[in-house]
Length: 227
Image (cartoon, rainbow, N blue to C red; front, side, top):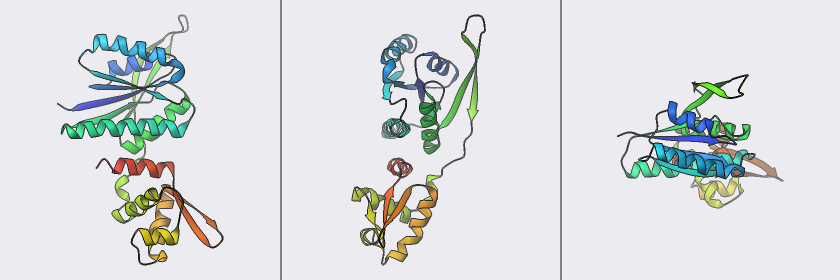
């Protein structure tokens, strides 16, 4: 049986998660909630477990106002789920509902979904003027541009891994030496292309050029480790 991991955001109301479980295909549910609303998330899980007693439902706290930690939380959770599925030799989809929570949570889920090549959805509802309730949920399929991990070849991954293993900023000359290039110019072309892709950044101190991974670079390495 194909597995469908549904990732869904939750803020002060459980509605977006409940709508997602009714409208989207899923076998495992992963709820990302703002710490302020932990009780809401735990109550929602209990209610869903009564209806979906055979399904796995997990909760993850997420910083509602920090983009970097939000992306980290979603990517890390997805990496764990994907490893589980691969160990079971199961076919799977990652499905992300970006509805619910703060704008930062939504943006983090969207960016993480692009990196994961996940199926992305937004659930649109209409507000009843008399009752102030949201009704008539409608699924909007989001088709974002893809950030293709496969565009980064093995030599470029070697450069990124070397920067990561160094544990911090590294000079261009030291990088060339550790990554096994014959000279700094030999690695410079790869560095320039990686910087254009936004996975590394560089700066100068005197005559030396130093390099570091960006947040996107760290996430790309994590995703590559799942291959």
